[in-house]
Image 1 (cartoon, rainbow, N blue to C red):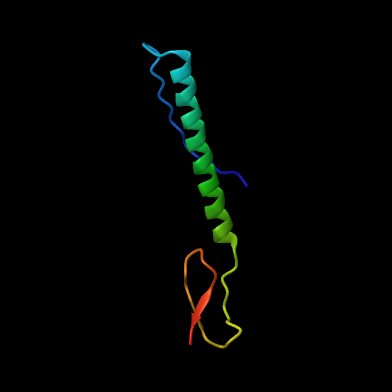
Image 2 (cartoon, helix red, strand yellow):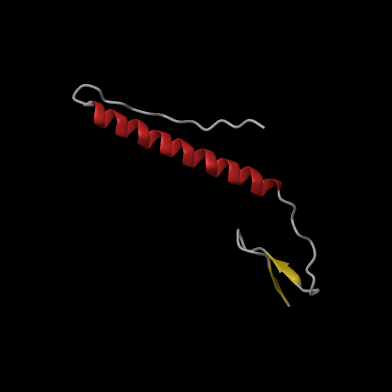
Length: 72
């Protein structure tokens, strides 16, 4: 499995010091990490089986990421 998450980092070095450049890079890495986690969660959720039956005999109702619930 391979996925690409685009990332653009703009560093303005004209009047920057080492600390401000380090903070900019750290922020970009954090953003890339969040994007990678979001992509991984999306891929895993897509691969999960869709439940088709409810033990109580009721009808399943979509509920996002929360536990499955049903309507009687």
